[in-house]
Image 1: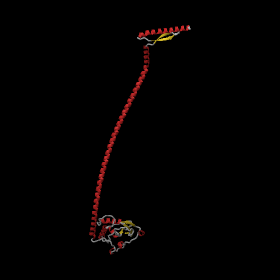
Image 2 (image 1 turned 30 degrees about the vertical axis):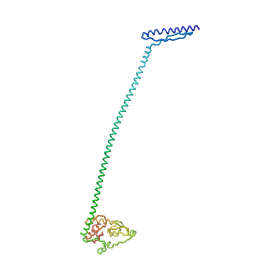
Image 3 (image 1 turned 60 degrees about the vertical axis):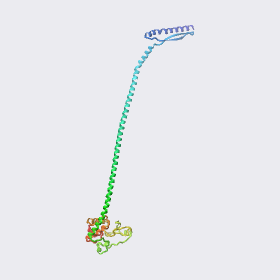
Image 4 (image 1 turned 180 degrees about the horizontal axis):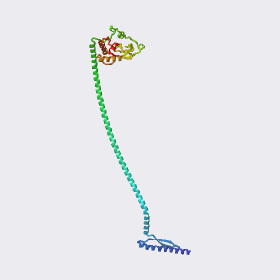
Length: 327
């Protein structure tokens, strides 16, 4: 036991001496540099409850600074590279942001120009549309005014024509009476064909004419050519058209005598039209060409027949048609 204690003391003493002697050399070196190193006490336990104190010197501050600088210098190339990379990245981001901002500004400017052009175009279109509408309204007003003026003129023309027609009719009646009086003297329209002067084969249809009445069925059974003209029903027989008395109880005949045609395909009114035109061309008729055997037409026929030495039947007979040259 004593031996163990003895060895322990010797070891502790040696350790203390070693610790004590080593810092002195370094302290001298440190004082030469302008600063000393601090020491620390180390307490070692001794046998028997005693302890020994050992002084431990700390490394000088300059050595720590040098190590820090060395580490800093060693780390500076990587740090600088990283800093440069970060700065380049930030610069690139800033440049990209600037370019994007510039592009956005350019896009907004283009959009503004497009909107401005579209607005200008829309305003021009509206102005053109308004002009077209105004022109259309003006044209519509002009057309309405023209139509109203034309209507007034047409009405005035029709009214004048009606007045002239009435005057012309009265004038024609007077002319027809004058023609009849001047050409035929005391010749009158004939309604009775029983006289001796009509006892001639050429006037047999008039001389033998008799107003016979039959119903519709009888007329249909006995005659194949029956037409409705001049206000009533007519049947054709041996070159003449005759009134079909009784075919229609309400039929009306302004002229109820025979009318010569020669052919059944030529209706009574067509024959009368041809006669009116021929009489007008020869100065005997000045009335309307309407195909009706009215007083003017019969008076003109009477005057023509008297002037040409024909029997005055005042009707359309075969000798009169031949003399007029009407087929």
